[in-house]
Length: 331
Image (cartoon, rainbow, N blue to C red):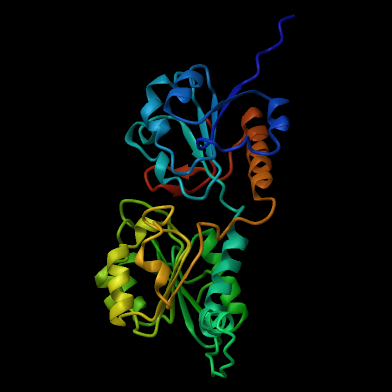
């Protein structure tokens, strides 16, 4: 008797990126192929049923889309899926899922740490330490401050939960307002953004990059914020207009910024943000805990088993919105 053929899974990595850990478990369930750019993807896509995309910046899939003859499901090992939301994929029957849930707690811990670093002026302490200079200062209390989380999804709710635990007040911004979220005092609609910016001591961007959020934080948004407020961006770099942010920081429109993502990555060595004392920066690593790569493969495998059984996939992306929505069943 002829054995049924295994489904074909193509893994699209960034050029030079190593194979994700745990792939032997995938090989036991499927034929696995690897691609790292447009040409290798054109070679591997024919016959591919499923794609696992680890390169969240890739444009290779859009370029090689014409070679996808059997593709039914794409899983992005990232929370953001903006690089995959090109017209041909959005209008197709191909299901898209993402890595929602893997990074939520780690990112929320990063945000809480950044808030406390600003409140307790750890950047100033580090600078004094490097000069061996003893200087006593008074610092702020985080308790009682208001945090506005722009993007009140799963990551945003974790942020709201943690900042509430230390006595801060959490408000959210989302596409649909809601007053029954246990992690926020209230979740306001997008049309209330500028009003809510004026109340917040810390503004946290946790929204996905979509046509509606690209460039959302510009000079107008910074003017709406308190001059004592700090901006924290763990969403996507292009949500913030960097030139406007630099001017706002220099002019005192806002007091500081904690940035993990940037319009251009890596950030050029001569970029003015490096030398600004009211800026805390990291290299797009807010959610990356020890063992995260294996956790992503395990999550894919859990969904793969559901796909193989014809069950609903979790973390289904609403392709018209560009972020995870309700569960979905592959075509």
